[in-house]
Image (cartoon, rainbow, N blue to C red; front, top):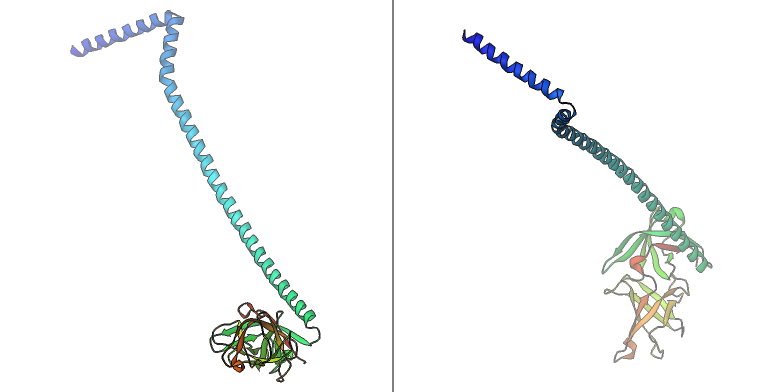
Length: 271
């Protein structure tokens, strides 16, 4: 009985709802607008949310696409940079070779009266006591002991030992070196020796007592002694030191060759 009563109540409620809906729909346009507003209020937030989500996902895809493009462009730029660096190194090598050839040309033109062999320095031993260099030419190239070695600026030294493809050169700044020289201005003979203190200074000794040697005088080889040809530039007087005994006075000569930067040389094979 209770179940029948409950079912009757539900039926009445359903009937009332149906009647209300019939009344609402029968009222026409006004009620239609109401339902449209309700539907709009319910649907629009969902639609806006879906649109936002779509735009967000689309934006992320674009972002990741841009990242991939940037990575590719970065790799391409790295490759181009590597190629440019390689080209630059090749140009530097060509420039160095051209400068070396130019130095050789200048040397051969400057010392055209001599028969020479070009070479370059491959090792240096510039210490306090021993100041020697090694060059990349030897007996296979015609180099022999005691041959004179010169650079564009002037005298370097002479060959003291030779192998098939290298030669050891005692420079004029070596403490064991002694060069017979003369002053270009007066033609008086002196002797220039290497010093312990510097790599670009010689000590000019045995200056004649009646000779007026002054700062700036040019010093060159005299041709005496059997090693160095006459007239090769050695350096310039930078200081004169007078002593109580005029015989003991000496001068400091700055070498024309910068031995710290010496790269290219010529070996004179005839005198």
